[in-house]
Length: 218
Image (tube, rainbow, N blue to C red; front, side, top):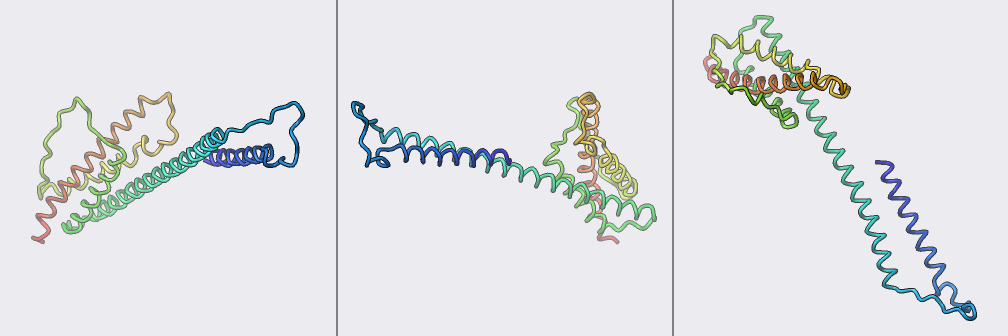
């Protein structure tokens, strides 16, 4: 980015220098001097000068537009990374809250479960905006089975374990240090992360839906 700005300033400097040379070399600057004997004075076509000036200004504007576009792209990337990091961390916090209550064998608070799973679902969908997770093409999509009251604890345990698998996936944790020689392994890990994320989205929605139907009975 700095190099592009330097190029812009350099181009502007060269343009200024060029105009100075043109001005100093024009007849107006030496009107007190007589042209050499036997030599016809150089005739400067104002149309050509205007055309050259327009081309120089056009190149400068293009360089400035390119620098602005790159800055905006970098900002979009930074914003996306910040959103993903926030969603990723929040899902882990919610998972820990659910697991803590399960380990303590507390009675299930369905109103709280509704809030927790609703946010997990929202955050997971937010991650999927950037990850674009998809299941295997050759796998037949199964219709999810609704969570029952007897399976609520088991469903919450499965949700916690799936979140663990997703957040600990090396494809996500080591994305910045991918070895080109291990691309096949990375692809497998990414496929696993996709499946986990889709499971989190679907399972959290099913748990939320069941908890909503039970919270009024508590």
